[in-house]
Image (cartoon, rainbow, N blue to C red; front, side, top):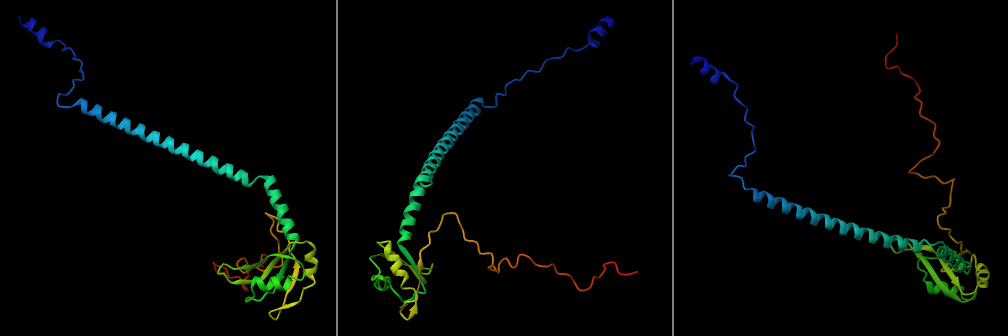
Length: 202
């Protein structure tokens, strides 16, 4: 009898597999609702981002189209030709008195031909820069206007010359001018009169 009890109580205890038993205190339906709500918000945000991206693409295409229209070589060439034609009928007038009006400049040059427009250049403060451009209707009037070089207006000698056409993208290079912000490009390095060794002598 003792041996049987020994066999019963001394044997291996079978392992019991643990199974995930849902906790009755946890509300599973609430978790599902939160997940569904979060998923809906993510879809909404994704849709808004796609709409914004589409709007940005549309705006970019519109800008590129406008830029392409303005940068059209044929249009630029036509504008340049028109500008050259206007400049061929214009003269540059320098040393203009600051108190001089466009009407007075027009009266001064009206003997040369029909004046189409007088432009007195101003600075950013609205003050005259001291020079002007006179545009004529006839090209021949330019040669007549050049005869008025060093003529006087308001007691000042005018400097009259043909108007030059500015080429886009080309800047005039003045190698001889000194720029104080840069200084001289080629400067000899400073050499102290005596060389002192940081380690001393001996």
